[in-house]
Length: 425
Image (tube, rainbow, N blue to C red; front, side, top):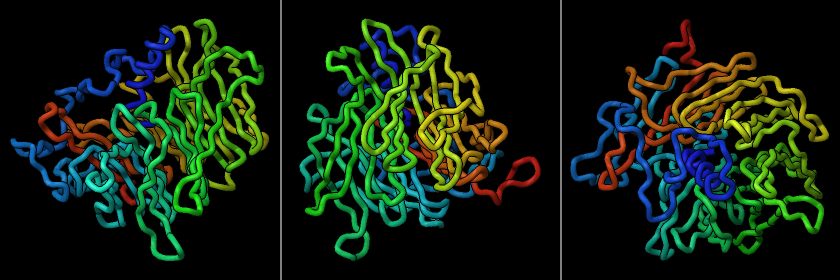
């Protein structure tokens, strides 16, 4: 889940169903992110790390480091900000370890090599004839998938693959698709072997699976999980996707019929989808799960009451047959946006609502400060959990000064070595 999720969810619900709840209270139907309309900027007085603004003329070269998070600045919660090689907001991050991380923003991909962030890819719009906006990244060892879209009105899903070809060194290649891009928010899961990327544009009824084709293209499998009845007139909208294996994939969302909506979960067993309607009046608006193989499986669910709009987070164990157990943790939340998260193990997860960052250590869920000197870095767009004590956080810097100024990004890491008495570096 990313920063566009709360805006898009609110837009989707206001238009399609008029449901009485909104996942992100600060956002209204007007803040939809529709092409051609200016997006609302971050709150002007929210603060920013020192020297975050670009020069007066807004002219910052691509290779110039961002000042929003020049190294060695750490929060009391142990998050240290690292300089970025590109002046763009980072919208997604993935890693194989704290020393091997990847992030995307705009048309660029950056990589942390254990020492610094480096620019490793930028889409060549002159050669391709179109621009691409990257908004998701999934990393395995020497194997990375980045997902973006081409511009409005002919929006299509565009993939960037970093992988070995013909037994040689890993290289980047662009893969265009004819798949329409229906929104600016997403949910996805990369198999452990990196041979398949499951992808969902939240609010859509379709689920996609991308696989490399022998000819260098892409094989795309499509599903439309819904009721078994041929005369089923209900509407299905999926918001979250997570997998534990290629034959153990979950979806979360809702089904609506004649203006009445109920929460829904779906499970893929390698052959077919099975649907489960939630017993309580909750819509599952987001989901992510544990990724460590061989450990107990858990799902984190963000749910919203269909009548009141009250939100909560649940941590639910998953049985071997795909069934959900009694929640280990359930907490009401408010926050400034939709929750996102990453779980390394059942007792090691990091979550954020876009403003605050929360750490789960297996027994408690607590806020971990990311502000430096009382000044928040900006909007958290994504995070990756390295463990109960380690995480990467990326986002957009504050304040937003208008369309004539470049919006910058930030990246902060937290490592176990920073944990001393009191949690201060």
